[in-house]
Length: 357
Image 1 (tube, rainbow, N blue to C red):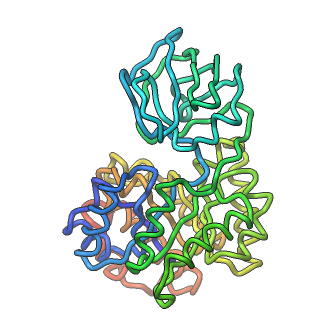
Image 2 (image 1 turned 135 degrees about the vertical axis):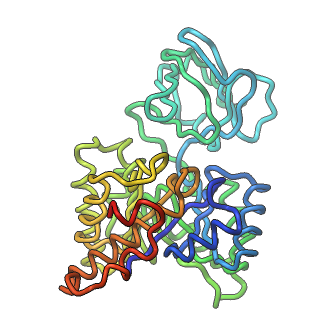
């Protein structure tokens, strides 16, 4: 059976929904630190523990994100705003970033893009000592907490763990967490840094979590073999990977990563837009069903449902669809599909899913 990894959020954190998710086939329950703070992390940890399931931590990792918004969250072309460090105390109108290294690497004239098609900014001036940058808005758009920020055409060299990541790993490693997902893993050195922190935090080595490296950058692909050889699993994030690789090449990149993992016998999971239509619709699309079957055929060890379960309208049904398609694939592989009674396949599908699938 393929592993089903889910991200918990407002749609799935109640005791009843967690129970239904487990019954439907969810295996690993991730708390995404990129959309958390110390208070919400504690609340989610307590909720999952009280429901009797082990949970995991997904780090913020080496990606620039908006960590604080001061003043307006809507900007028009020509507006001025400030960018400042997450740790600075500021009354500027603008936003803070979670990686202070940005201010040492950015330069006037750099173009910043918030999320995929959001706010676009030009850096006009940077005070590296104070970690403050002045910007002009080139494309109107909103500011939203936790959204990713990229410098157009320029890679950033960021620490593999943020301060919040380190605090969370140090605090929760001894609580029996199942996995730590290292976001934007780029090299073996990143793995060593994270592994050392895990070793230091785990006084009880019998409950040491597995380390899953997330491949979501070109650098991660280039160093894939040494990364995959040093972790318990690889997670391909097709969404963030498409920031650096054109969408038309994401299937090629996914296949290449899977092929390496299969040769090394390293478990490999795939995330992003698995059941995107089920964010609002009761039924998956035909293309999503085909995508799932093709991923299973390619040798994935499991599937990751993120937004579908965290904030979607049908979290339980989304897990049921993945479980169902995993059964279909396995039965076809074993050549037993024609002999399976319908009740075995459809008994755990809610509502109209049974007739649709």
